[in-house]
Length: 389
Image 1: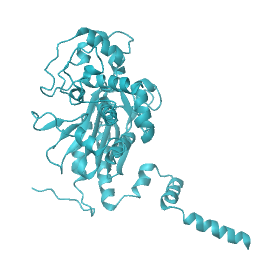
Image 2 (image 1 turned 90 degrees about the vertical axis):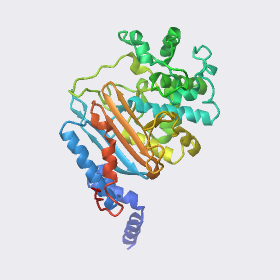
Image 3 (image 1 turned 60 degrees about the vertical axis):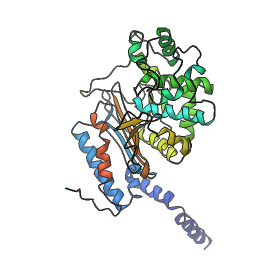
Image 4 (image 1 turned 90 degrees about the horizontal axis):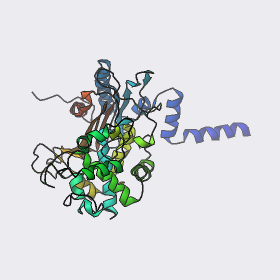
């Protein structure tokens, strides 16, 4: 009798466990992968949206137009997450949700956030001249904020240091880049704060600023202050990972030819950060929840600083679309570097996040407007919205 009583008590305790844990247990026992298991938590409308997204990306992959990983979330809930294609052509290894992609210029979002974190702590003053932190810097009137919003007028180090970059078997770091760049004292393209001029030099310099003011290497600062606290387990700079590792994607052109690196790949801040869609989702959600920098600082980052640009603009580390319309405003960054194309988009009004990463030069990576069309084609009741003629 006692044995039966104990069994009954244990059964009641098991059934009374939280729905999420018991549900997760049964889904795992049924052999469902996390993406399929997550579908059980979606509403009818969200399932319809996820199905349309899956059809879209599966078709692109089948036709050879997309090789990469995708994540789409709204208001904190992942609607769609999938990896499609090959990590390494030589081995045939498939991509997974934890496969790491070179973020290319999407890295600038992380760099700008690091600078703004230090600005909030009053360790960095973005209104000060960069020369205040680096006395030998020959461009006296350039402010830190001019680097953040690409209004410094500086030349691009990738072109200025062309001979240095193509030294055989050379891995240039940021200190090397700075030394070479300063020694050349190249004439700026424009006066500081004259107009927008996108330039990788700006963000390579900002990475150095983070190092000097924080007392940590750029890689360690990001790891200690962002990646570890946010649970971004598959994110690191190029200097911290094994490029031949089983979790690291290999880059290819559209004909599946491997793309070689050069010395500039090891300069940080402007690029050379590796991550996954899920880790970027964690970062995006932390921003939405004001866990990294305040709402006020984010508002500053999402401000259009180049008034001469009417259709699109740039804030601090973010490109801006529909920046004068709060109902449509989108903050984003795309990337393109040595076999990688990347897109990280966020629509602020509905806490939407769209992340598309590719280790092949697929232009479809940038077709995020088609994702928005799918998302907006289904209403909250799960009914497809008819397009107006």
